[in-house]
Image 1 (cartoon, rainbow, N blue to C red):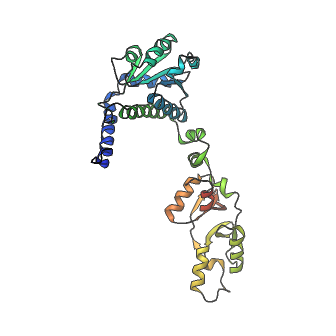
Image 2: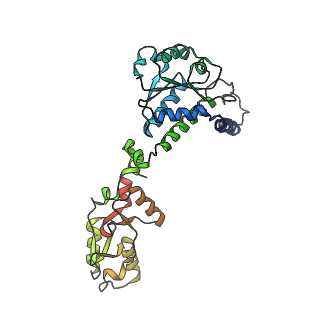
Image 3: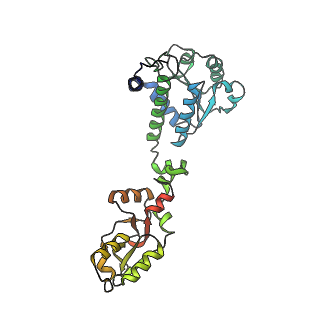
Amino acid sequence: MKNNIDIKSLAQSTFELEAANVLALSEKIDSDFVEVIEKILTLKGRVILTGIGKSAIIAQKIVATLNSTGTPAIFMHAADAIHGDLGIIQKDDLIIAISKSGNTPEIKVLVPYLKQTGNILVAMVGNHESFLAEQADYILDTSITREACPNNLAPTTSTTVQLAMGDAIAVCLQTKRQFTDQDFAKYHPGGALGKQLYLKVSDLSDHNGVPMVAADANIRSVLISITEYRLGATVVIENENILGIITDGDIRRMLGKYEDVSGLQAKDIMSLNPKTIDKTDLAANALHLMRQNSISQLVVTDEGKYAGIIHLQDILKEGII
C-alpha cells in the first residue's frame, strides 16, 4: 500500500477527468443522434439495449430511465442473446448496443444475428473503426481520452460517458413527448417520490375531521375542540367564513398574557389570516408552505370554504419528507 498518495487530490482528479469527457459529448451530438431520437419517437415497438460487462450494467440503468419517462425499453444481455434471448426482439424494435471497444468477442458474435433481424441497430461505442461501429446503422460517439482508472483499464470514464449519453437520449425523448410530472407519477406510484407527485391534501386531511369553534366560543370550548381532534389547532368560523385559527401556541401565549382567562372568547386569542391550501393541491406543496412559514398546520379549503386541517405529522407519516 502506498502511503504517500494524496487521496483528496486523487478523487478530485477523477471528477475532473470524467467531467471533462462528459462535457466533450456536447461536441459529438450530430445528425446520427438526432435521427436516433426521431426514429424512437415514431417507433411502434420498444428500445432494446444490450451490452456486456460494465456496459451491460449501464444499459440496464438506461432501460430503467427510459421506462420511467415514457419510452418502453427492455434490456437484453449480449451473452444471453445468442443462447435464446434473441427472441426478445420484435420486428418494430430498435436496438442500441453499448460497447467501449466495439470489438469484444460477445459483440462480434451477436452483431451478425442482430443484423439478420432487420431492426435498426444503433452503436453507442467509443471506437468508430470497430466491428460494431461498421455494422451499425447509426453511431452515438462515446469515445473518451482515458479511463480514470490509474492503469487506464477499469471502465470508469467510459461508463460515466455512456450513462450521460443515455440520460441525454431519455431527456430528449421526454421533452419531445411533453412528458409531464403527472405522467411521471403514473410510473412511480410507490415510495416517497410517487407520493410527492400524486398524493393530494384531501387524501390526508379527510381523515382528520373538521375542528372549529364560533367566534364567541369560550376558552373551555376552544380547548375541547383542540384536544378532541388532536391537530394542535382549531379554526374560528363565522357564517361559514374563516375568521382565524387558534393553535397550541396561541393558548400558551394567552396564558402568559392574561391572569384571568375566564372571560375570553375565541376571537380574542385567534390568529388572523391563517395560511390555507386547497384540498386538491398536492401534499408536497403543503409541506413546502409549512416549511416556508415555519408552521405545523394548514387550513384546508374546498372552493374557498373551510374543509379541515392538514398537519405536518400527516405528511411525515406518509414518508414524503
